Image 1 (cartoon, protein in one colour):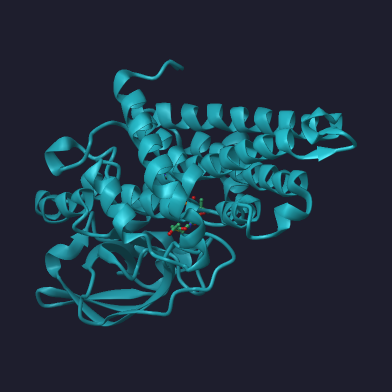
Image 2 (cartoon, protein in one colour):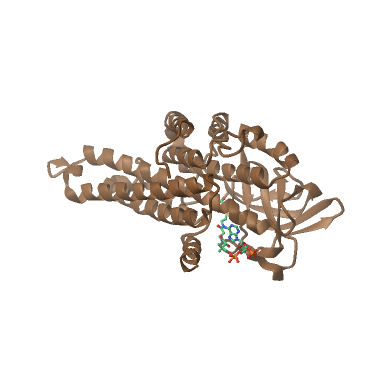
Length: 380
Ligand code: CAA
């Protein structure tokens, strides 16, 4: 693995860093406090080519690759984790359409997703009673003439209120078929029979839109079938493998922000006559935070690089997501501790980082699911 960034990767990283520092970071506290969906920021990211980084240029994407996408996400997450998760999911949806869509599906959706005409692209796999075990989903799709009719409920859908296109998974064969009886469909925002529920009142990533969806006799044309009939489960798994690199990047960005703010605070805050950074108890915390972030960075880059080379990367993506998410929670927890009482109030960002980091251990596969994937890899 080459650890030097290519010119393109360095450029994408710099572009994301500049935009994140100049435009996103100053709004992050307000986005969190007011649960504000950052529509204009997402449009700005699209204008910079950051909403479809690994989508080929002929479909409106940047074609800059997986490593570049991970680097850009880290920069955005450092400024605002709410924005980063939506950027991550939109990029995952775009990549998945580019990989498995028909020419017509790609032409219809990718330019709008990449260019910002769609505020979001969403991924509707989970259900109220099926999160870690999507093979147990109950939403159904039945063929009726030239249409498919979808019925059921989806849960935890990032960006669902604002999505121009949603990849929806549904059973096209009986429940006894498990993962082998699931297909996916491209459902457009505003489709008849698609009802968007009330946004969840979350602990963190509060500017990120998270909604339940109801599919009540939702009719989509026959050509909305995405991939092979009954072949949807594998598409979900492959998309999530890539998505996990995105969440690992998000966790890394949050942790880097927490460390940077802790360093600044520890150099300024005095106790017992010296800046607290000069007390070994604090300095060693900062050292441990830094080491863990660097370890997570290497794992993330390794997973992204393997994916970019077209090599198997599922195990590395799970390892990276598992380590980075748990690392981010530890690092952000230490950041709160270093800030003392100031770490516990809204005036400082430390508490937001901790709240934002916590969900990275849950979505796109819980830590327990990542351990299951890693254990399967270890045990062969
Ligand atoms: N790539 C390709 N194919 C895969 C695969 C992968 N990574 N993982 C499994 N498959 C294939 C298997 O080979 C198998 O195919 P065959 O039937 O041909 O052999 C098929 O899929 C079924 O595989 P398993 O028997 O291993 O399936 P399982 O039911 O045991 O599930 C699991 C495996 C890893 C636990 C999986 O269910 C999983 O990842 N669960 C977590 C789901 C998840 O991450 N949800 C997140 C929701 S999305 C979200 O959070 C988005 C957001 O908005 C932020």
